[in-house]
Image 1 (spheres, rainbow, N blue to C red):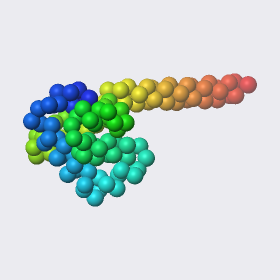
Image 2 (image 1 turned 135 degrees about the horizontal axis):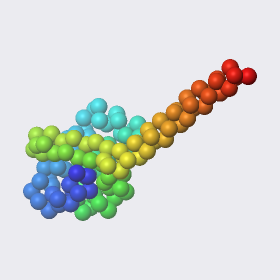
Image 3 (image 1 turned 180 degrees about the horizontal axis):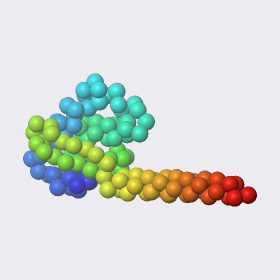
Image 4 (image 1 turned 180 degrees about the vertical axis):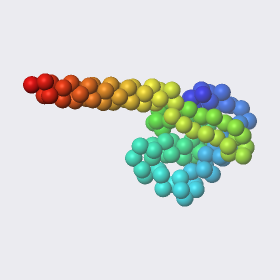
Length: 124
């Protein structure tokens, strides 16, 4: 499930304040705070921090941080204990597999070119 769908499903329920407390607690940990400055993953952790400090999900959706995190996947095992898993969503995986496929095809063509180039030199 994407984070956007999850936030839509808990908006206005009793789970909303529990999520805010959990995200606020998570982003105040020293190891997470250090990741907020890192390129690539920093935007995600900043968005989680903003989610934790928001008044409501509707307010969070109005921020630019929502766009940075809405396509990520989320699995919630136990919200009250903080057992949440955030991972790349379907959109990210599609991009990843496209890059891997292009790189693999390029490598295959390079190996094929190298093989036949060597055969041509031997025949001459």
